Length: 425
Image 1 (cartoon, rainbow, N blue to C red):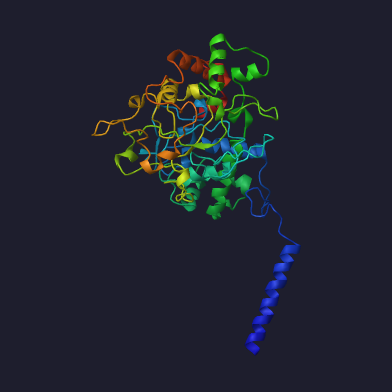
Image 2: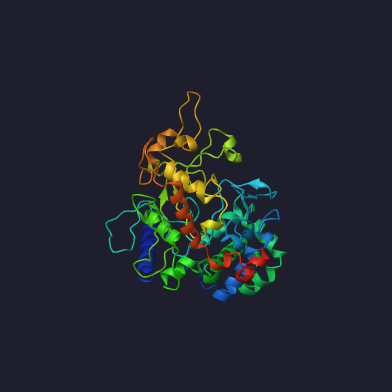
């Protein structure tokens, strides 16, 4: 009986504590990266941005000591790769190839967290856009803060083996004193706090409007009524928007948003396009390896969702004219190749896919057949062999002329327009 009474009293105590927590819940910010800390306030936004900028260009963040964030995300190329490699080299030795093409970090300020069922805030809540959002090609990071942590610990990128290894490296770096000033003199006693501080600084830096979402292209000037498109560019925009031709605007909206905001040229949706396999990628030396995007291998929580396999997040088309590789596997090296693929993937598949031993074209060869049904058949992918392509070569040139109007002013070939940050890369 005494034993039962002791447990009854304990049960009552647990219940009382639970009720107290409901009546007086902890503040919502508790435990967040931005929460006040014992030992000092979190640095202000300007301090964090300056620290994040310094860290972004510091190769000491990598285990090799050779790779900075800017090595793969160069400000001279819209914070994308500065070269024509399909994937970038990093890792423990600084020469390990990545799995996917490095994306641009510009125009992600309105990127929503990943959702399997996204409903756009455009006045029609009945339209389910399907899987949408999240950072990285597979949307696995829900915020810029979470995304900043991924490369720091990835064996194919910064290759730090643990937060402790990162903390040890940074403790002797040029940024150590600024980190101590901002986050407290004993910051390096806690590796988890160091990782959080670095991610926070990088996150805030990547919210800097002038560097990450300047909206300074000529097309922005057109939308503001300060410039006009040429005849060729206007034809390209019409083809870009036309649902029966390019139909590009269905995933890359070109019109100002309902709230008046300038377009970022992506709906952030995840789509399977069936792009060809790039056989020169080191990962593809294994014929059984397939990058399935939302279904892995880097993302693990959706591995059993067959309808998501082969889907990758739609990137912005802003600054696409300065890119040197396209799609998640970097399979194409020019806008002309990309648009020819869109226009002729289904009318002339032999242009893009290999033939099997039986002589048949093996469409969608970078996706196992069981998931071919996921590949988009929306226009311009609604044609059959023998049909006229969605765009002629001249029309492709017109669309490219329009896409070139999306290049931000600081990326144009005028040395006076290059931002100071570019000189640090």
